[in-house]
Image 1 (cartoon, rainbow, N blue to C red):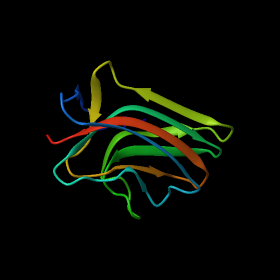
Image 2: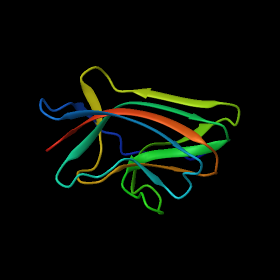
Image 3: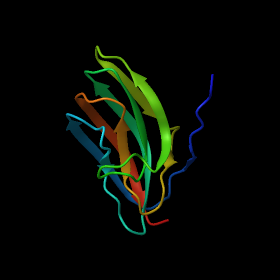
Length: 127
């Protein structure tokens, strides 16, 4: 059995930044889609993720890669979800966030087609 290693960096949130919440639905994320668009010179921090699906799939969440390619740097995943209402919930410790790659989007990719619903929370700062 092989263990998958992820680039997973939890850091204290910057004192200045824009707090955001994104809610989206996709019928097929096998081509990789942005959860939160890139902002040149800014870094996204994920503080909470809620993901539901109606199909069996493995999801990867990370930095970059949206627009038809796989996630550039996987931060979380692959996360296996069941076909019957697979649910994934992740929350960073208080006043912390998962730091994504500067100037890249937060993106999601899957191994199979199916409808997914995502709620993502975070902060974007010039760091």
